[in-house]
Length: 79
Image 1 (cartoon, rainbow, N blue to C red):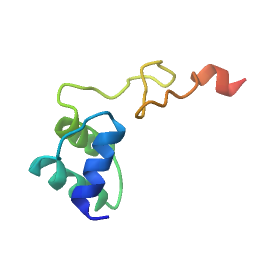
Image 2 (cartoon, rainbow, N blue to C red):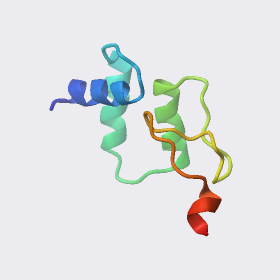
Image 3 (spheres, one colour):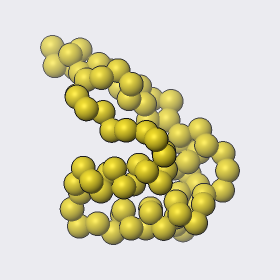
């Protein structure tokens, strides 16, 4: 699978059915080449793929989804 197919598949998982943009492909390549990950790197990635979206401020918020998967609430996992 080449980089364009990887980004297109990632978009499909999120319910976005369209070809990836040049900016999305470039950001994906930049992001996967990072040696370490920081909040600012995640925010830069997010700006390209979900403009206007924000990272969660606190763990356990119920607004997290990956594709159609919604993980269990943090408190129910810790019991």
